[in-house]
Length: 319
Image 1 (spheres, rainbow, N blue to C red):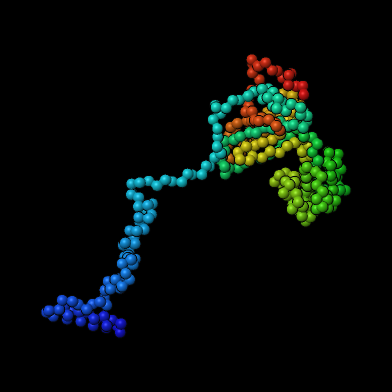
Image 2 (cartoon, rainbow, N blue to C red):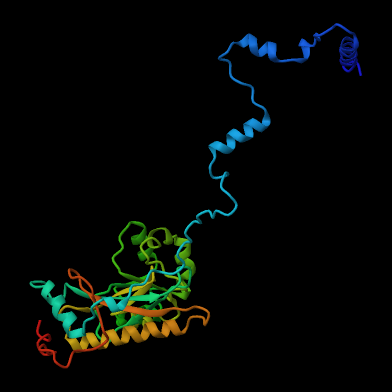
C-alpha cells in the first residue's frame, strides 16, 4: 500500500488544479512521454503499441494474411506403390527374336562366359513382403559352385557330403580358415549338431556381410546336408528388390528350347511364391525382360516365335 499513496496524492492534486478558475495548464509532465520523445530528436524511432506491432508482423508474413477462401497448396503424398509403365507403348519380342538380338550384341564372346539374365517386374506395394526363394533350373547356369559343409568330420554326414560334391567338410579347420580370411567356397551349410560350435566360433562377423552365414531362415542349417547339396549344386537364389526379381536364366550357348524350359520353370516358381502370400497383399506380374551381360533388355511377349518369322530355333542352336 506504500507504493499507491503517491499516485493517489498526485491524482488529487491534478483534480484540484483543474477545478480552480484561471488555470489553463496542468503540471502533469510526470505522466506524459512527449517530453522524453522530443528530447531524443526528430529522427528517433517511434514507439509502437502492441496493435501496431501485430499489424507490422501481418504485413511481413503474407502466408498469414491470406483470406479464408484461399486454399493452401498441399505437399505431394509419398508414392506407396512402385511406378508402372504402360506396356502398350513398349515393343515386345518373342523368345527367338530376343535371343537373336542379344547374340548380336555378344558377338565374339565365349558361350559360357556370358549369361542370359531375366528380370520380372511386379505390381506391388513398397512396404509389402518381398518374394525370395531358391530353385534348381532344368539346365543349370552355373555348375562349378563350391559348397562348404560344417559338420563333425568323423560322422556319417561328412562322408555323405563329400560323395555329394562338397568341396570343404569339417569344423575347426573351417573355422580357423574363415577367421584368417581364407573363404574358398560359394555356399555354406551347417549340420544341426555343429550349430553351437559355429556360433561360438563367431563366424557371423566374417560370413554375415558376404551372405554366406548359415541360418535356419534361409534353410542352410539342416539335419541331412547331403540331401540339400543336390539342390544347391546348379541351384540359384533370387530375391525381390524394388519390385523386381533378377536371376541368371541361362548361358549364351543354350538352345532356345533349353531357355524356354528354364524360363517356364522360373515363372512357374514365382507364381507359386505369389500364391503363398496373404490374400490381403496384391502382387501381380507386370513385365518380363530378357537381357545379357552386355546387351539391353528386351521385353518378352510370352510367345516362342512368330508364324511368319524367318528365323528358326535351329538357327540359334549353334553357338
